[in-house]
Amino acid sequence: AAFISIQAFPALLDLPQDLEVSAVSCGSRHTAIVTRGGELYTWGWGKYGQLGHGNNISSDQARRVEHLVAKGLRVEEVVCGPWTTYIRVQQLCEPQD
Image (cartoon, rainbow, N blue to C red):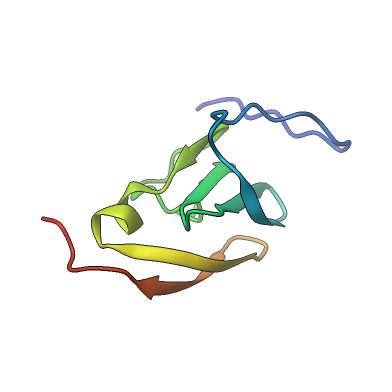
C-alpha cells in the first residue's frame, strides 16, 4: 500500500506554472482544484475512487482528471465530501474517443 502524507497544517503545493486555480475543495483526506481553464486536479487518499482517476490509488501529487478532458467537459464547480467528490460540468464539444 502506498504511503500518503496527511498534513494538518497549510503546505505549499507545486502545480504546473501555467495553471491558475479558480476553486478548491477539501474532503477528509483528499483535495481537488478547478483551474480557470475548467480542468480538475485531485490528490490525496483515493481508496473509494474519489480522486476520479478510474482507480483506487492514492497520490501525494496533484493529477489532472483525464476522463473529463476526453469527454469534452469543463468543470465549473467542485465540492469534496468525506469520501466523495462532486463536480458541476459544462459540455464544451463532442467527446473524443
